[in-house]
Amino acid sequence: MEKTQSIEDLYQSKFCCIPDNLKREIGNFNVFRMQEFLGTHTRSIPYSRKDYYKISLLKGRHKIHYADKTVVSDHFAIMFSNPMIPYNFERLSDDYSGVFCIFTEAFFTQYGVLKEYPMFKPGGNLVYLLSAETCDEIAAIYEKMFEEINSDYVYKYDVIRGLVFNLIHSAIRMQPAEASSYATSNASARIAALFAELLERQFPIESPAQRMILRAPVDFAEHLSVHVNHLNRSLKESTGKTTSQLIAERISQEAGALLRHTNWNISEISYSLGFEELPHFINFFRKNFNQTPKSYRVAPVV
Image 1 (tube, one colour):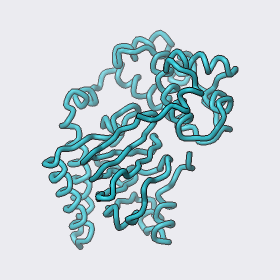
Image 2 (cartoon, helix red, strand yellow; image 1 turned 90 degrees about the vertical axis):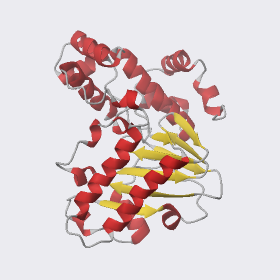
Image 3 (cartoon, one colour; image 1 turned 135 degrees about the horizontal axis):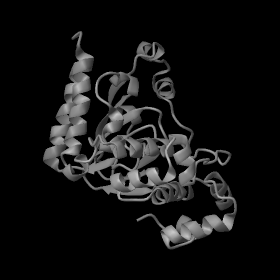
Image 4 (cartoon, helix red, strand yellow; image 1 turned 90 degrees about the horizontal axis):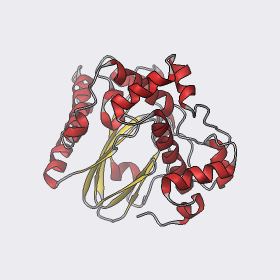
């Protein structure tokens, strides 16, 4: 897996300079046409995590990998990436195009809470397949972004913030059942959100020397200053799953990604995920995937 790319790395590699607003730490936004930015011969981008947010409109055939998931888009898709989830995509056809915008969390200070939206939550869907009609509607929002960012309107960035949220809500409307749960504000949901954030901070694993520390429900309960039974009840009420199930699912997700997207040996992956003995990891993996880590690694991605 490639090292995490910072937004400063991105600007330095493509433009050999860093925007003044990044230097002043007041947040950053930019929008690009994909062919102009990546070139016409780029077939894929490295599997890695970025420390900024990115929303991409993809046209043409693409295979998109994120966490342990793979999605094939035959025509149109919108993809939401965030600093917590590593990803890459492969271009499968020559007739491709697209646009994308990038921004930092600081750009939205006092203007909505990005992490509350389902596509930016741990385990959320990053990719939404689009119809041709919806794709045209999304493309029109990006064109408005280009128009605003090149204008001299003094409040243009407020307009742009609204356009970013238009993209977010356009995707949420495609899956209203998922969107209905994100605004819940009861105590159990708050504990569940804190647990998810604490769990997600340990990922992605970017080096064999990095190790997951919090693995048992009691570890999380201690960090959240709640009794482990209270944590379990809150998660069960909010997610329908136990603490152990949620931890196991996230470890499984990371294990699959490391096996598919790194050349680390299985012992290194086992260690980085907090297993004391290799057989324990193999048994865990077989229980969750119905195959061994070795067979999963060599199996073709469907």
